[in-house]
Length: 265
Length: 284
Image 1: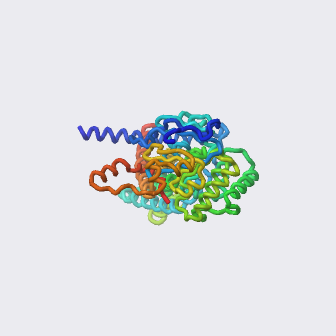
Image 2: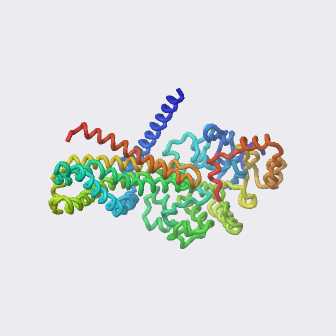
Image 3: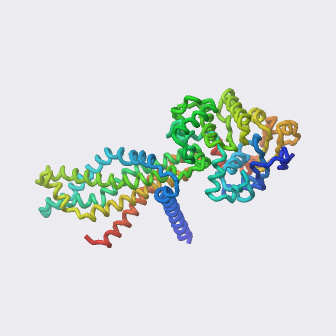
């Protein structure tokens, strides 16, 4: 009986947390999409500088990781495919699994590590040093000042990073294709592009937008709910990373299932 | 004089009036029915020990904590019942200087001071620049607009925070522990600044502190709060000559009696434990 009530309690907590995320997201969406038409400023400058941080500065590390992931995928695919003498299918395997799944997912994980944690730390530090209180006493909403620009930046930059990650993954695969599977570079790239359907790419991008929203909501919510004291900032940051990874996987599962039944490939 | 909330000068309209204000943190009641008035142009110093509820009182006055019951009327509007838009309007007429300054680390001093102007007015950049210079001059920080807050000393940070609080020409200025963490000379400088603001702009100023010397220097009236209740309120002279034991103990800096038994100690721990959130404001 105690277990049942414990499970029920945790489930309610979880639903409450999702509710807080949704409410934060909705307030930020209002500030970004509706409020500018009521004479409130849209903080484009802040969003652009966030986008630089979230997007452009993530490129080197994301490129390296997804290049390796593409190479690993090619190796793993080839391990199975060579038994059937179907090494030429390596390009397809890499391109499809990058665009549909690993491109968005690896990008999300890199973004969680770089930006989700940074959001929680930045807002958490501001909370601890009374800067959030200061914003409120100046009649500036912390959500529209701090959170909304982050949402805007992430919703634009995470899909962009995902496209880049897909390309880098295919490039990584081509290293194997060219050296081990009798492809020329041009043929490998052409084979990859030919194997992709538009919906492979778009389904990945839809997921990446949702990942971006999830990561921002969790990072900002954890930051805003930081308690008193510097060690709480560390706790918030850790929680932001762990919860984001978990929720990104859940969102991924949800949308993958949806796409699976919506249009079978 | 005790919890009497009559005005020092009866015919003056109060700028702030509190009636039976009760504030909870979770289950625990921190303020047990606070009532007092503040009139235009006066400086009220709220005194109290750690965990007395003085920080909570200040946070409630600027709308950072919601009262459980009671009224906080600022400029004719009840804060407890105000909508977000009404709240924002009240907040544009108040300025708050936080204990650690609470300057935004990612902006320069100038950007910090200009922020409320950029957010709430449609002034030209050149006008904002002029106001910004003026405000920095008022707090004795001219020429520091391009500095990062991290490059400033503790006293300068507080001055910059005051400049930011002054940006919108507030009618009421709140200070949370203005001299906490400062050496006596710098702290005296901040006291002088508060006095200057009071004389030059006839601003209504509310200061929360436990620094007695500073309190007696800047206050028109004082309020001593203990365990969430007002112990005494009155002019500085009235406070000095008060015979109330708790006031005397505070003003004469007499320590609490030594704890004798185990039960006493446990009782003290459970009864007087400051709430974690009110303890959060006790840095520096």
